[in-house]
Image 1 (cartoon, one colour):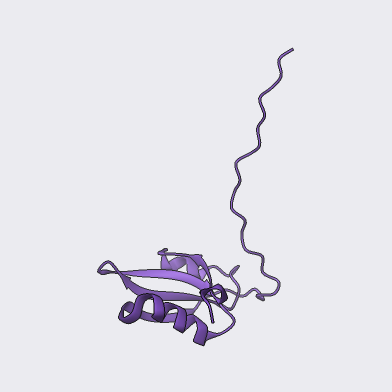
Image 2 (cartoon, rainbow, N blue to C red):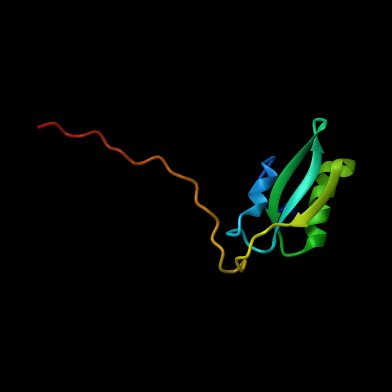
Length: 95
């Protein structure tokens, strides 16, 4: 088992992001303590045991809980949002 089995979409994020219906239905909101405050991740995996193991191994006693997100998309049909790329602008030729 490796951490590759867990896909983290948002790290240390606003928990309301888990209310997005466009997430896969296998996405979970994970709650843990980080630097004396509560932090949240949104992650997906094929097995809840792997999700628990990943976060317990990472945060030990600071891991608090996880719950299913509001996502409704089938995970096999879901495409993760692509990061915006800077446009390829080439200098104009004068002439």
